[in-house]
Image (cartoon, rainbow, N blue to C red; front, side, top):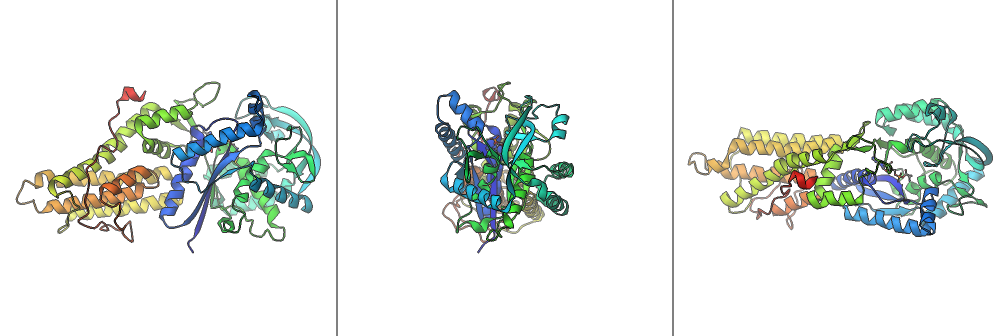
Length: 521
Ligand code: ME8
């Protein structure tokens, strides 16, 4: 059986509709999932919605709806949006589904029995928007304001069930210090280590006064399981079936830095607590957590108050002007995967579309296939003897294939995408050097034309192969124009020379049509 690979995105709150941030994380996960599938791995890719938050119930009540009505409405929009944007998730979990709720109650029940969850009282600084307590020291650092919404933290006292997080301090610390790949990028791991060293308090695991919205605490329905604990369990509940249990532990949880603490500290601690229970030995800690940074917009943080969110309407406009793959290209190549935030700027989007997609890739496809029609009867020609320029092109292809693999091993989708496009650039240079349009008219060089065109077609096949996880529709179109629709794909798709001669090629329209800058703005 092939090696399995399990990748997740956060599950998103359904108080509102999806925006660019949700689409971003999900698109990065999609590119990684597609890449691993292409390599033959048994992939499971999960996304979904987090529904039991107080802000979901509040948003529903503002509209005179029940929480579940509003959750149903928005969950459907998340689901259909991801479908519309070509996301290849294997399941979509909603935390209001019975399959999830039953498992969460079961696991919390087990933790009550071991004493990892206990009834106690808590007083602390509470960030209402994020539904989380902020430790005293950190609240002071933040001047008692939410780092996300900027609103004042509230002093709050609750009788609650607690999770004994403090008991896992040294185990967590050892895990992060000995296995640096567990939390990436490094700067994020160091941040987490620093905060664990400040000491871990036990954390509330339940809450009261939710108006009945939330999963009931086993044996104490007055208390509802805290939305964050409920939400984290989605990664496990979805695969806790006989067919799927082999996917656990997750290969990577992809998130943004806003929810690092829950994922890097509370989640592994919950799993460590569960794993000690007989029968739960399979519940290991996920292999990796990758926390990216934020998209900002034209230099400013995106927020409701500023009204500058790149929302669904805006995303639709972009797709209708430039196409879905152009949006994926911008998100994946320019996104905030590192520790720095990334700016979504319309002008830069346009310029990159023009330079990278239209001029580099689109132009290569168009030149190659037009010349193939003109000088090779619209078929992949039989190559003759190869010379130094061909050897250089083959070397460029090998370099690109290796670079994509190396970058993707670390989930560096932007650098992988650059490496794939570098092969398109190298092929353009090769064409410029070989000048088949002139060679065809020169009796001394005429014989090189089929060789040149074969090498271009084959390089193009490799470019499409490398681009498939990132620009799936573009890659499929290139394959189709190369006559590969029904044809058998080469056994080793990255070996140069796999494209059979004789396949019928097709010119087609411009892959990335010209867009006027004004139209874009
Ligand atoms: O936090 N740039 O849900 P959420 C990049 N339900 N990514 C962004 C972003 C931005 N400006 N804004 C949001 C929750 N995201 C919880 C998660 S998981 C068990 C529970 C993305 O709807 C990013 O992935 O607020 C971030 O972590 C997530 O949306 C937060 O989504």
